[in-house]
Length: 194
Image 1 (cartoon, rainbow, N blue to C red):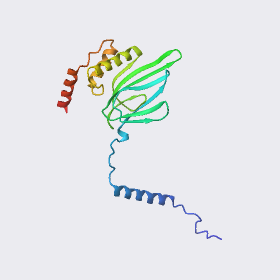
Image 2: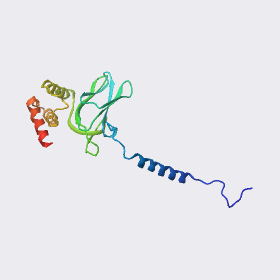
Image 3: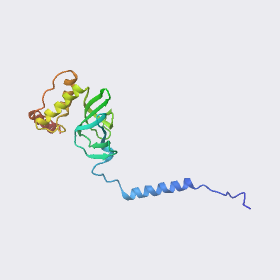
Image 4: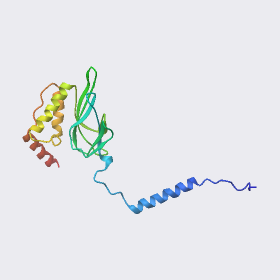
C-alpha cells in the first residue's frame, strides 16, 4: 500500500528544461561568437524561378548569382548578395495568348535596409524598373542589349540608368543610350561619393 503523504509521480520536466537551457548557454559561451561564413544565407535575396514551356516562364535576364538551388525539374531558387542588380522577367500565357509579361530590375538590399516587396523575390528589393506589357518589356530588353553592346555588364551599369529607362518607357519615349563615357562618369562619381 502506498503512503498518501508521498506522491506517486513527480513531474521534473520544468527542472530538466532549465538544466538543458543552462547547459546550452554554457556551451555557447565556451564556443564564443559565431564565425561568419563566406555567404550568410539570411543576407541573400532569393528569387524563385519557374519554367513551364509556353505556359509560365520566369527567368533572370542578367545578374550575378551567388547561389543556385534546384527544387524540382521546373523550379529553382537563385540568390544574390546585397547590393547586386538583377533583371527578373515573368511571362505567363494560356490557350488564348499572353496573360502577363513583366520585367523588373532591382537592387538587392542588406538586412535592415528598407525594401519593396516583389512577387517571387524574398524579401524584396529596391525596384529600379518595373514595366508591364510585352511591347514595353521588349523595349527594356533592347535597352539591356544596348548596354551590353556598349561594352558594359548590365549588372555594373548605374542604378540611375535603369530608373531613367523605366521613366522614359513608361512615358512612351525612347531612353537615352548608356555609353561607355556615361559609365566612366558614373564610376568616378561613385568613387568620389565613396
